[in-house]
Length: 76
Image (tube, rainbow, N blue to C red; front, side, top):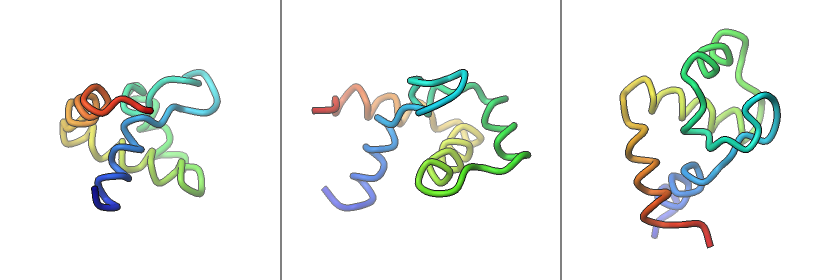
């Protein structure tokens, strides 16, 4: 498995670490919440980058891809 595949798999298993949606998988965050971050500014660091990517995936209708990855490759 290459680095980008590992990163995508990690993204599929990452949960929101704080706030109203704490412990939700990032891909399961409501779209309006991601739009709010887009307008206010994503957090810095890895989480911010992941939220931006999730925003783009949802914008392009690709959320089933991450959900399928999470099921096909459960976290060990």
